[in-house]
Image 1 (cartoon, rainbow, N blue to C red):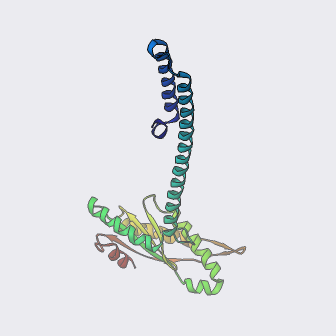
Image 2: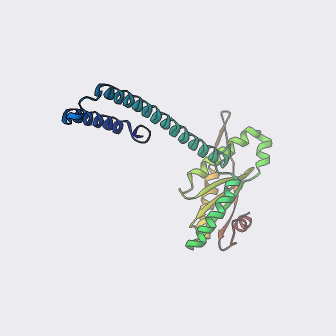
Length: 228
């Protein structure tokens, strides 16, 4: 039982106590001196060794199972994270945004704080693709994604909404501050330079719409529509 339920060290201790007890009995109780103690001690030795080996193997197997379970959990989290990310920019995707807004609105309602929304897109993006090619368009989207990630707080959420559209969710931010954040981003994008095939692509601009919960709606969909 100890080999199945307890660590090897405790099993060894129990085996030693048995040995000590049998030696004491054989020496202290004359009526039992005729028993075949040698065979009994050998039996305890062999059974103890086998039990300890079984315990060690079992512990090793359990440790391997534990490691495999942890790896599976890590892989599950990784896959879940990948399913929530846009493959090009690394920002969260529209699917994640929809669930995030539901959670944020519930929190904002419970704790009575606003939520700012910025929806932005790249001006004349189709013309940019036609002029420089879709690979250059992807490079531009990637650089804009990097810019957005570098200008959000830890508890903000930056998403690629679709195509050249992006959304920022700013918990605890009122409409005026949200406008200022949008204007700052607009100015940053004007200075953005995209390196593509040893060329620098400039003259980029964005347009943005802003809204805030609860001023422009009581649900995530409402404030998104308002910003749009």
